[in-house]
Image (tube, rainbow, N blue to C red; front, side, top):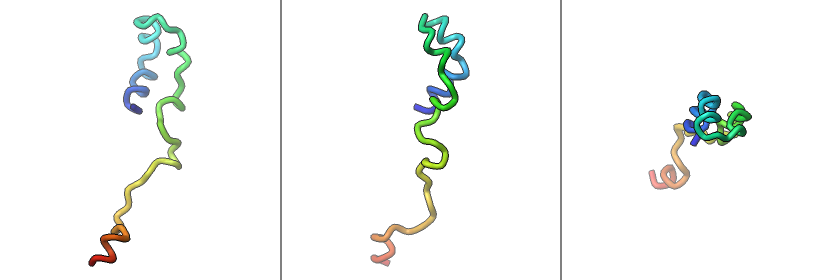
Length: 55
C-alpha cells in the first residue's frame, strides 16, 4: 500500500491528467506511510517467551 501511494505521490501530476481527479494533486508525503516512523513495528532478534521457556 505504501509503495502505491509513494508512486502516486511521485506521479501525481500525471494522475490528475489521466484520472481527471484534481484531488490527486493534494497528495502529500504524509499520505505515503501507513504508520509514522516511530510507530512502525520492528522485528527484534529475541526469542519469544514460548520458545525461551521450551528451550
